[in-house]
Image (cartoon, rainbow, N blue to C red; front, side, top):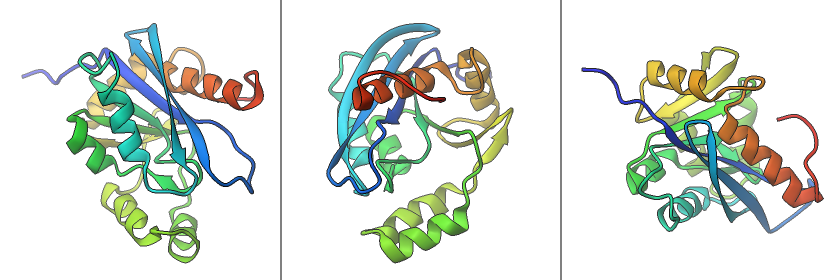
Length: 189
């Protein structure tokens, strides 16, 4: 039996913020039907908090796109500093596969040290990362996944990467998030 293909995708990234900033950070989601950009979802998560999965579930679940989205992409596993997305909780809440994409393989030893020594609920956040496991190389990026195979993840990247290495839903979310923070988009995705 052929594996499910994913044509309706939501990609999420957070807005940039100053290093000493405290408070809520904007979260931007873009919704795509194949390569057609269909909509934007905007919310907030607490800097270094542990509410990213709940906020993502609310944003997707309460949106007009809820019945159409087949897969969620994340630009990294944490938003707003160390607000680690509990991808397993999010998967349970929405019943949608998740694909985490990063340009570079993160330094897990450094992340572990920071979480366990400096971040509230760091032990719980590290447990999510440990359960998810190391990022896997896939093409020119690294991925983590819940609810889809490596072959499906490869197909998603092949379908949604148009410019550079980052899939369009994440690239667009990054551009919009930057514009929300600075008044205009800037920098590389």
